[in-house]
Image (tube, rainbow, N blue to C red; front, side, top):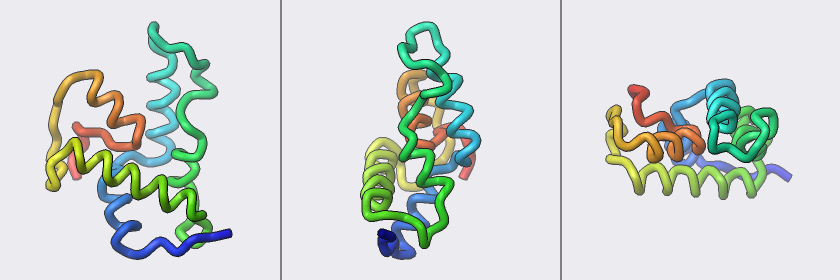
Length: 107
């Protein structure tokens, strides 16, 4: 069942998630291949998080819309509203990138 995702959520999600689905997939595999990783790179990340980026707006479910809201809230809670490139700590950047937001990428 598809859910209605209003313009505000759609636009804000795509503003804060500045990585493409391919970039996110590649990053999750790279991150999972690290020496501290316990997950095989092929199974890295949350499949539903990557799927949201791949879906058309009309195909989003209510679960997808909730995930989009959570990502927007988490990214904005840790970033300024302008989302200007910020280096930060390596752990912080990796955590943000797992959500699809690269803090070093210009808006």
